[in-house]
Length: 315
Figure 1 (tube, one colour):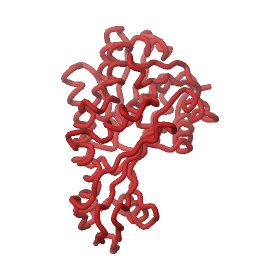
Figure 2: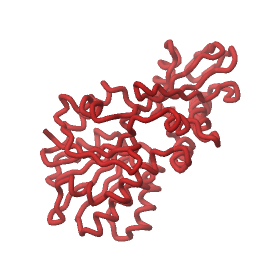
Figure 3: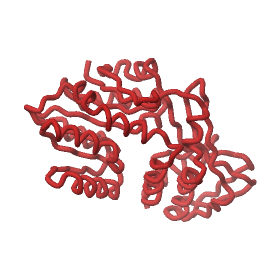
Figure 4: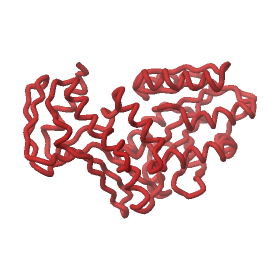
């Protein structure tokens, strides 16, 4: 049994309002479902950021301040399937850059997949996948004399509240040296009619992805959630630029979680908050960079201005 998962589930379902961390979406089935979500027509985020890397990789490279006369470490936090990163690797190879690519992920399956994908596209490329926590691994890599380029793509930072994002960037900054750079991919603020379908697709994949968290609790903690009695509930506050996901009980019910020796009562319409997905503008990015030791070097967007990749350096 994953002890931390058990602790967090007990704590999250004991408080009011109830909540579960989005990091627990990504068991084997959840990771596969999220890969499927990223390819859905409504999920504009992947295609928008892919377009940036496909069409503007040379602009990104120019902003990084790196040279093909010196090797560097390319480190990706939460690499996923590496779909977008491949475009950057192609551009770096075309321009004869020397680098070592190190994807970091908490999913061994995701790392195996990205290693396989890269070996197919770049048979001679050295890849050093690293399984585990971002900061532990970054801390271990800090003594390297080579400059580092860190990728944190897919608007993953949007899953954090602004205070948490500021803390994350501070921690990241502490593990970077003077000439290191961060490529931070963020979803930009936009209208509800574009954002909401991305979290409530017509095929129901996002719903299945959210409800899989209850199935995971069933299998790992011996619970009896009936997923037919819960539904995925997405919301978006256009003014604040915040999308939220919740799992809503559609009846009054009680769920037993045997491994935690607890029973959880749900009222009809009661929600379990599962995820936040913040949308950004320049002011918000500058705000979360305050007092982190980091500064914005440049910003590149897709053709529809849906998504931006910020190049961030040390102050």
